Image (cartoon, rainbow, N blue to C red; front, side, top):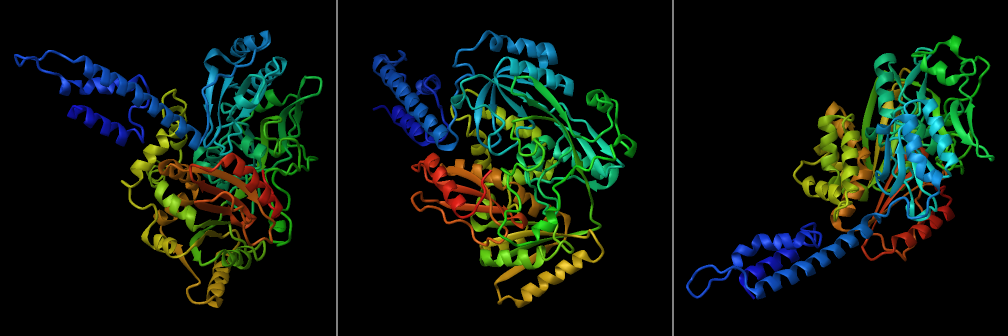
Length: 606
């Protein structure tokens, strides 16, 4: 075999395992690029072109390499997040469904309707919608919904598409009808009530945007601060999925004061209004005319809650009940509705910003001690009470260190605001009809992670390396002396513990505080980067345990877990389990068995 062909074969073996050429059509092009090396000479010493033998070898090698790489691409797609390229309309459509996109364009404008939209979830899920429509007003949103109901399509109300469960994207293989996504992000008006004591949010208002506005204009804090706040998820989605957030005294996103649409049994769309606003019977026109709301605009007879009732009082009772879980359907229809109704606007309580705060990284030898710290320091009473208490174990610490450096650095340099745009670019790349598209962003992040320094400052990294269990705790001064009281409780606990059983570091400077929080926030992203980079499979499961549970459920040994990455909104005993499996495990089968084991242990699943 000519040396050039040997060299070419080596290139295929080494590079083909990663991304390399990736399709039948592109591999022959690569072969042709190398062909000048194997041109033959005639008997006079001149170049006479390619021999038939050479062309046959090149052609056969190109086809074989392309087929092999196509199979490798398919295996990667199945390994990470299975998704296909089928369209939304593999089933026969009715005339109404065929004409629906044009009707939607007539309501919102052609530029706000995307037909046959290939939509990728932030972490999992992918599908193609007949149309993705973006209404610009609440009246338009209702008209769009009415047309979709009349056409008998699957309807998905969507916010920022930042959720980690894939609930806001189509499920083509599980639906017998085309899907229309109603993206409500353009409905982004915020109206403060009573000088910012409460706020009315249209469905598309981002949590990060709300937090920034309240802080700047009223020195108040928003109702919810999520781990994924840098993706700017919407307030309506938070209510629809019962988002919990990191701040334990606030409770999950919840309100009984809302404006929403529901579909009645006869197929008509009904607008339901429990906002408690004196709007004269026309909430759309009234709210469009308002930029602030005063006490005179509020119905004083309305006593409905705009936050989870008595949450912190219930939280400190360490009994066998679950503090919160996503499938809890208490309250009015929008709460945990998961798309069964379309939320247009909600009212939420806001909170004072504490006078000062102290961020601590606490490390300990076992999970039981971590729970003891939570119970005896953070949740002794409602006053003093920690602002947040987040937990993570060694496995997710190591995974985040290996897979999260780039993300931490980007947020650290650019801030939170541009990340949503960059995330949209990532999702776009993942939907491109090219080999390996669904893993290119994570592969890129994996390869470039080691070019960046460690995410955590040295004192925190030393604790992370030395201990198996970690808490990121925030003490806040909501009342005079509260931070000092909590610090005293922590020091007393440490003094009573055996030597070396626990250590903590106070994050004094802004850089250390920011890096500690960012490290916690990027864990879900780092998990996917790690699995993709290592060629492993991943399964994410969220659940809540009763408040008095101090152990995590024992998972079935039938499905070997390479890494059990556990992190938690610890104050509420709500857990995220990111499980790493080898490539040979049937993860779909394992998921159902593991979920059953969690429920058997008393856990509540979403």
